[in-house]
Image 1 (tube, rainbow, N blue to C red):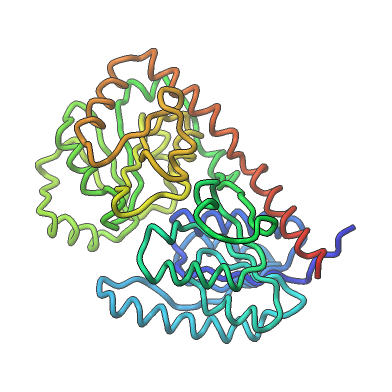
Image 2 (tube, helix red, strand yellow):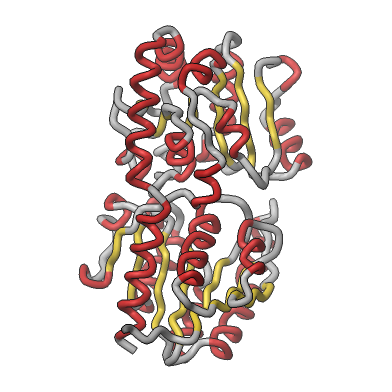
Length: 372
């Protein structure tokens, strides 16, 4: 029997309800169930807070949040990483595995490496499609990491790292989230309700979704934005959007549970602009498919790898909104087509079952632990 280390020390910078902390929550749930003791360093107010219900999870707060002022954001980032560096020096060591979620906790990674801990990065970004800072952090990751987890083959193909220590583990839904989704293709088709779960980042296509909603008044549109009401109001003002003039559109601020929205939707969009960013995976697409919903996603990236045109959705470019609008009309004009897409979405979602993900994570950490 493999003797596991007494603990895993995990670091995640911004704890909200977006994809990367959700994936970390799943990973740590699996590792706790497999007998690991976890020390977690992250901020307050997101999905990772729920882990404190486990006696073997010891959560510590490292303060961090975004600011509309980039200088303030950089200052907060550097401050949080200084704190993380010293926490890693104190809590990590040769008897631990340090789990770095995303490439942002670089201070923790440096401290863990100096302490003699084995360092595992869970790499969610495509750093080389982002700015210089992300590219520098990705380069740092390849020098520090003992192992790197990528979320898709597309993402793994864009980093230089020893093949035997590079692991592709696609994201999955948590079992609790999957249990809340209730596929009903016939009812979904009749609703003709289009959903997108997004953020206020310019590359996410939030403004483009609003434009689509304005041009298709015969459908119902729901947009969930991972931001506060005040931040959304500021965004709408800056973009000169009068929501009252688009009665078919409803905008919701940050949600702790998005399952009711999927259960009430018909089609889910992801509108990331490939000129600005490339999605490495696409958890919202998997959430949608698990609810039996067809998806429209970008033409490139890890998210494109999980969609087959005409089978479980379509790959379309956000730079061509008219084509997306035409495809939506086509889907909702043909019940038989919609039923086929819904069935394909459900079938494809089985590849991302939570047990498949949990087994892969535990196998990897057990193998790393046995080398210590």
